[in-house]
Image 1 (tube, helix red, strand yellow):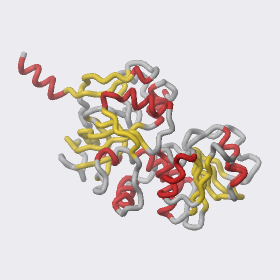
Image 2 (cartoon, one colour; image 1 turned 30 degrees about the vertical axis):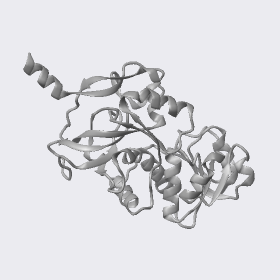
Image 3 (cartoon, one colour; image 1 turned 180 degrees about the horizontal axis):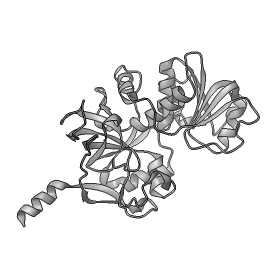
Image 4 (cartoon, helix red, strand yellow; image 1 turned 90 degrees about the vertical axis):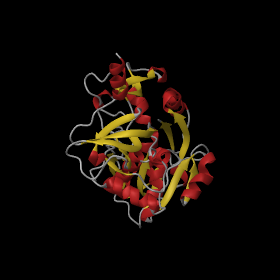
Length: 322
């Protein structure tokens, strides 16, 4: 009996699991089986996990196409930072003890746990200038911002960019990446975030609560929208001819942009760039990019983190500490 308890303890972990879709209260911190890596996967001892709005939508059952047919019990979480515990037979480039950060792919997810598995191509060495909590706030938003700016919109030095929701997770990374590339950046956010965004390098700021951006912003080449709704249709008015509107909050409504010669695109959330995380790592360690972590919340209080994400304007990212 004692031996059985020892084996069980070795194979178990604590995780936040969902047994049915619903409000934040369905997130249950409980004992769960520890995952085992397949041949192309790495088992990570999670130190921190980022919280993204998509996690909340998944928890409510609004994005079931991203899930397996019977996902329960479901462990959410796509951003992970931690230490390599074990590698699959086909994995090269990582070994036990390496500090890493990366993405847990769908439909497995799994970062809201003490241990998580992900494929080796979705991991990179943790930036040396970030701790685990900061690193966990990077992967999903950085990949999304990179995809929006460089894969979909061809952001270059001579471009003028408008970022909506610039103080949020994707927004504050998009601002920094656009400035790293040498572009001119216009940002919309509440007045509370003006000083913060100016410090990130924003050239022009619009308080959306006091001004209609389409009335005060001169033409731009690219709009990165993290807000959605009528903001997308209104953004068409400030785009130059042959401009690009990129949505990171789903496919824009039919008809957006049809009256203008502009491109309208929706970010898928996963970059086709195989070494993107390593590139992001280099930019961070060069001092050109740094995530903002608005709060560090214990893994056991994941429901509180979801409540915050759903009811407040979060600056940067929330992170769960495992």
